Image 1 (cartoon, rainbow, N blue to C red):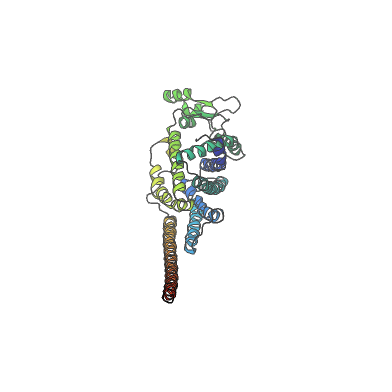
Image 2: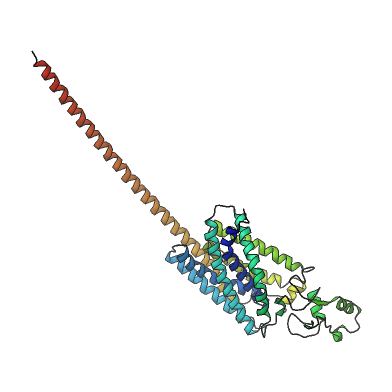
Length: 383
């Protein structure tokens, strides 16, 4: 049932939008965009999904709900700008391009969420069958978009050319070989001759060190989609988290709505900015140390302006949820009141009908009495 080609074609749009969302998000992270900035700027998902759901799904939002959504969006944009300005170590073109990619990813995610909600709620089949069809389309279009991501990575000025799977990268221990390589080409392809695929070690750094010489002898350059998957545990962790996140999002959208899912996203930003970012900067592993090259982040963050702006996000989300709850209570009371009036009207109509039937029965009884009296009179008058 899950591999019905007609149903798979129906979910193809969701798969395309899912692939676009993940591809743009991956490139944004590769350009050095911080997780807090990604989550903050991704909040434009909320007004986009609210506006589109108003016209595509026919939903109505109370003015207080729109007010909360506006606060949520403006706060997210302000936080994103403040976060990007504070990252002086990143090149400006990378920060701007990262913000554009995050915004595009949020818009595609909003469209995907609405399409998924419409298709899933319009079907009566189990969620797991629908999810298989959605993920099949996502994998198919992700494979198609891989060359496009590579072309973006090889654009002039981009230091993350390793996003192109056909370029040579150092391995098998990427971080160790990166440190032992020469300082060219600039970027993630450092130490790899893109013509011959030869690994170029920094012999000045290695010197007479036996341990460094042994590590350098194990380094090489290679290309391909799965290069570095063998011993890079972070990739497997990322895959597991992505699959779990996709599953939870699908469940939330199918059971509730896209807007409810968007409003609940304010909590992850709090966790990332106040707890996970400082905690990750203290993990004594090479990938984490490279991502936080300026040292551990303070806990709590020392920028009080960003702290207070970040706290507005869950508060505005709570305001939206409260407004939605109150609006739903009003609608339920109106429906109950309308139902009571209809019941009273039906009762009165039934009473009038019964009264009319009783009057008609009484009239018929009177006519029968008159007929019987006339018959008796005729009988008495006979000789």
